Image (cartoon, rainbow, N blue to C red):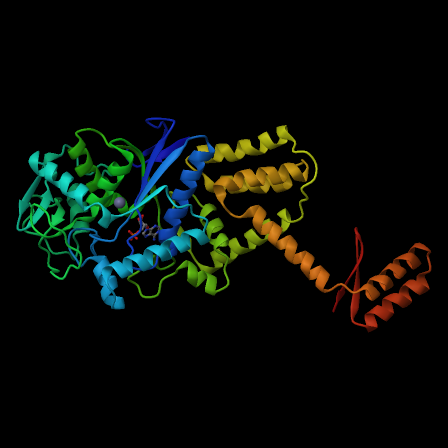
Length: 471
Ligand code: AMP
Ligand code: ZN
């Protein structure tokens, strides 16, 4: 499988440290509010990556954190803790907020067929691990304690901006726009590993530490949770593109300084879902959630298809019109699949040919839009229905669009509708008309048709015989 690696800026052949177990870490949600459908785009594409790896024969262990402390309103080290903001907004405790929005997040994931990672760890579970890492960074001169906080010293690194070739000055100024400079920092890029002092003294969650009562920085949680469950060598680290800087950049700085060797080989970044007026954000008042889509009558599967139709490394623009197009595509797809009958033997050669395009699409940097066209190829293929159904079931292990389940549901609905509108008397008249036509008794056939018309019934002649409907 070829995957684009943000570290090398190119597509690379994916080679795990141990093909018997791919170690994958993904940054989890900050549980201070509902996830918006932009956040969920990232989780859908990470889900597809994990399922693709499994489909292609790699066992995967995937770990995800739940950020319930330390993520400040700015991704830099200033601003209020997002969790505290959520608690104040709703007049609840931070832990109540965390519990409620963690559950809401997984409920959204369920609706979108996003599999739960093998390990899900709340950041507040691992305070001892953070303290241990921070202490070692201090002991080895990679961190310093000043003004009540522990900072990572970026001047100890050979290279800090590992993901981009930006001018360091520009990037630093851009990030700090509107954010007050912390005069305790020795270098402008240094970041906080452990806070005991911040502008917001009412931080709700605090723990004892060798540096005083305080709380961890946001970046350290991902390094420690990853190492706790996946060890010192990580194959893939994933997240949204906004996480590349400063979050992932800082994760690499502290992890590799702590370990003394390279940490993660592949960095997978999903680009943003934008609205037609810009980036989707939770601070802009009402924002788009899965529940909002559902309340407007949208099937979450249509949103999943909408995401799969574009490549994860392109920005995707959300408009209602675009979503409507995905709904139409999804409904047509399901209606077509509903006509297939599970009869006959699967034709293995034909199935292998259908799978080839699908596998190639995944292998080519997770080209999901091409993988979706492989589904359309199945619909048009010159093989029996059993083979088509087998191919669709196989592809859906990765796509998770409920292809066969939704088709079965539609068939059931159609059968129920037919049964509800059944009328033996009308059926008999329609059958009598068919007989009259066969006997070339046109006058009788016309008489029956007119009689039915007078009763509000229209006859439709189809290749499968005459059908009727109420008009
Ligand atoms: P957060 O809950 O803010 O920590 O974000 C959860 C995930 O969503 C992170 O991986 C972010 O990078 C990602 N993310 C944030 N905004 C967007 C967006 N508009 N489109 C796609 N992913 C996003
Ligand atoms: Zn993270």
